[in-house]
Image (cartoon, rainbow, N blue to C red):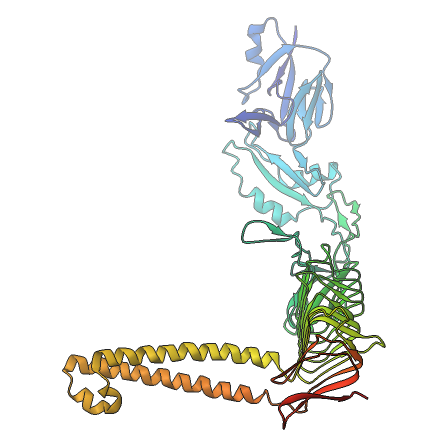
Length: 573
């Protein structure tokens, strides 16, 4: 009867199989008996009388075998049949399998999914052979793999394999070139462009007015980093096929006005000026002025800016603007706060309840002021009216309209107050003050308080000296000290030194107060002019003289008569 003797493990159907050990999945060699080299015997057909005769038919040198009844065995890739010897042999190095009656030698080549690398899996055969360089190139050629490692690179890897040691090895035999996707030049931010949802206050609540919509930058501050363009490059897979790259779209930024390359790094772009960041359609610009295209509200939040601010709408209640430059509001200011280091111009009016306050270093211009506190280092120019407000100008106050009026509250100017109508028939409390500089007066008040504290310190030290050493110390210090015991002498000297220091500090403060007081001297004589009329009940304060208007006057100018030290009046025009 006929038998087929297989010299490999028929159960193994692939080179590697998955095994799970300690929860980890890995690939292991499915059989150490199935690797064969070129012309190596894989199987033989034999005639035997019984199964006990099979062992005598096994070829010399083969210790592993398996015999089965003969069947119509089909041969496939990697196998040829020697009809003279009734032997199946391998036509190339590989892994022998028999699947569904088909005998084949699997290629030892494994290719990565992206077709960028090819490896050959090597295991010494039963005759301790591994593939030669020529065999490897033939296997690759059969697989139509053309983008190969060099012969030197492959040989270097082969030389590290010891064929006497039965262990799997894998060497890299082919490597493609990946395509490089391209993209245009773009810029990425080097700072946070996004506004906040609000600022956390000390009590843990959130102030939603502080959204940080104005992002200030200083000259030289790093804004953007340039990412250079990358040209698309065609790639190759291991079969020599071209891999087409893509041109990617990137959501980067562009730079605009007042942003320039750093002198230290051409890929870093910095602000050319102190200003505010503006990002529109991913174009980044630095402006000298904050421009709000609408109202100052919760969307924009409070503004604190080292420069000028222009609000195209109104400033809504509860919001604040702090600016070192000018502030312009194209509509109204409603119960809000402005602090400006320059001029303030409000095209509409100023309307307040409890919170409205404007402090500016320059001139204030507006249509009307109602229930507000205003302080200006320059002129206050109002078109229509100042009503129930507390306003101060370190120069002049003018209400310029034909029926311009000041009714209620207090208006104070260093030089002049000019208005058509002052007060009203209903006699609301209205006070007009000229010849005063509130800024200097406040500075003097603060300084005089400090002088008072210093005098208290001097008096306290003098009291301690009297108590401890007697009044004689102030009449003849040397004699008084000489009469004291050594421990008392040291104490007395130290206290007198401290007294001298405090007196020197007191004199310095007093001299400073005298210098500041000289600034109260006026360059011109102050006056109050009511070009239409002034109503009874209006209180005038010119320099240090006070007059309560007791009747209605028309076209009148009040001034201080220096010689008589009283307020007099004359025609305004």
